[in-house]
Image (tube, rainbow, N blue to C red; front, side, top):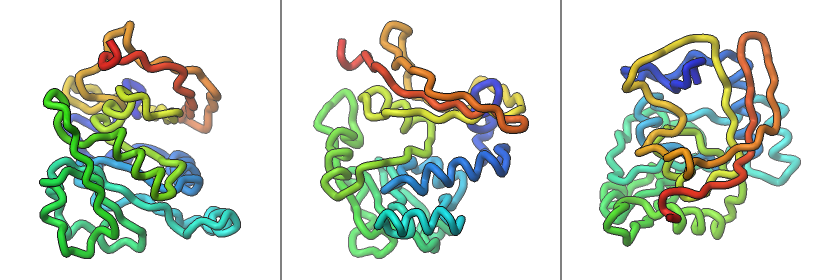
Length: 224
């Protein structure tokens, strides 16, 4: 994110302002994961996903008995995704988390190896049932998940206490903009309900600051 807490500019352009060190750091986290989860907006912005390509990381996964690439999981309530994105040509396993309606366009198609339909029953929070989705992911053998954005998805998972750790790279630029996206969007949290963090580490590398937090509590609005 920028020094003022934005993960993209006000036009929601792809956030390519991180350094090569930051990209390598992200790839290291992905190499440790069984799956990478990201929202449809993130896919639309980039058109691709970051896969493991560094030879030592590929060897690490092989030694751990993992497949070369973690599963790349797109979250989309509507399922309205362009099959012409380069993402669908990348040599990675692809899954989709969506609703029953969102799964319709992908029936009989080969772009996704697996489509998980997890509708919420709540009238107040229609869309994807994230508790059910995570239960399915665990049942399918995905124990460690990287959530790669965007802010709406991160906020939804934070609100349900489904995020254990948070990594933030603070980059040396100011983006500004009242409508520019932040790491956690959604409706926001009141201070007394905000997820609480414990700082695990802070490291400066050249012009960037790498922060690692652990979630220590999430008394969210939905618990009140």
